[in-house]
Image 1: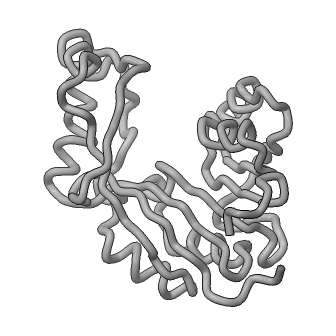
Image 2: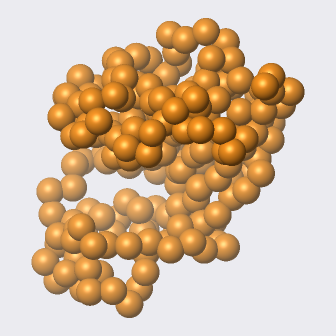
Length: 208
């Protein structure tokens, strides 16, 4: 699939926020459309788009304004845990994703460890953390997410946990000053207890 030239691959970023992923993909030469409900986030994303080629659009993830099977790739990072009906979002993602297309996702597991690290630790250590940035009841267990995607004709190919690198200077800056250093880095983990990413593929045969 990825042997095709990036410019010919149509990517949709659902819940793009400030455009970190969308703008990166734009710089890599992909044809990117990015949607969010927040006008202010979209304005920030547009300002940071060095290529001026990413198509930013205010839209509802429950009702995506695109034709069936239009995109080759859909991404959704740090978004599914912010909606009350993630199954509806996944249904729409599957609808606009073409046969054999790929869905890349990142979200948070739901257990006491994720509550401690992803919610409480941020409140304790990071200055000016917005109230209710994460809501524990909206976190998603990997087995549930996998089942919901299977219901929408998407097969999970991989899931990997993510955790901060422990022995790095930015960790100490976070703990002592309450600031997130731009050099803060994460690493892959086999443990899905807190944060996890994955790839799913939609069923069907892609036309070449």
